[in-house]
Amino acid sequence: MKKKLSPSRAAAYTAVMCALLIGGQYVFSFVAGVEIVTVLLISFSYVFGASRGAVCALAFSLLRCIIFPFSPSALILYVVYYPALAGIFGGLGHVKDGAFKSLPAYLAVSLVLLGICAVCACLYAFDVIKVSRVYKLTLQILLWVIFSLCLVGLIVFNVLYRIKGTEKLLKLIALTATAAVCTVMFTLLDDLITPLFYGYSRETALAYFYTSFTAMLPQTICTIVTVSTLFMPLTAVLNSPFKAYFP
Image (cartoon, rainbow, N blue to C red; front, side, top):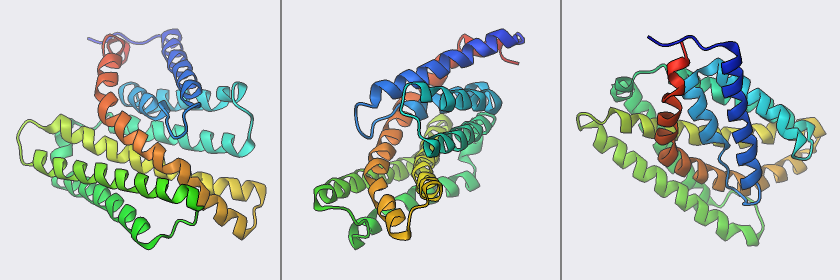
């Protein structure tokens, strides 16, 4: 029987994870496009639930302003996005492994991965991202990396779907795809909040949107790699022995 977690112990666990989020973001802030916050937060939320994950995300969003330069638009973005991310993966933590082998889940994950591949291919083929020549080749390479990762994920997902006893791996691919989509939504939300907050003109907002791709693409790749490799080890660590104290 699980022990009921005391408020002080819950606060302590949340504080430790919040410190890890801030420390992880600070360490990797020196490397463009690399971040560890997503996989840490979604692992914590998946194990400990949406409410505790949201509290941790909100505390992280506010306390990081002590270390990083304060920006009102960034604060709004973080306060909106990260608690929502925690809520999504906290809810997914209640979904049984077997559910990821159902036909609706199969279709949803396959369509998401196929959709990402299609978007990357179209962005590359039609050259719609208006950036300088300095970034163009880099963005094209990043688009093909994301395309390749998602295509491999799609193939592996379809193969595993036909094999018994692969529910956990199917779940991992589904969660990785969800995290990748959420990372894209983070940038799109920033493209909405920042121009509105500062009153950008249409041309400036469009330029900001195009420039944001230089950050979004490597972050999406980082999310795919970190979630697919670290999510299961992190949730295993968080589940034992800490999970025994949660009701």
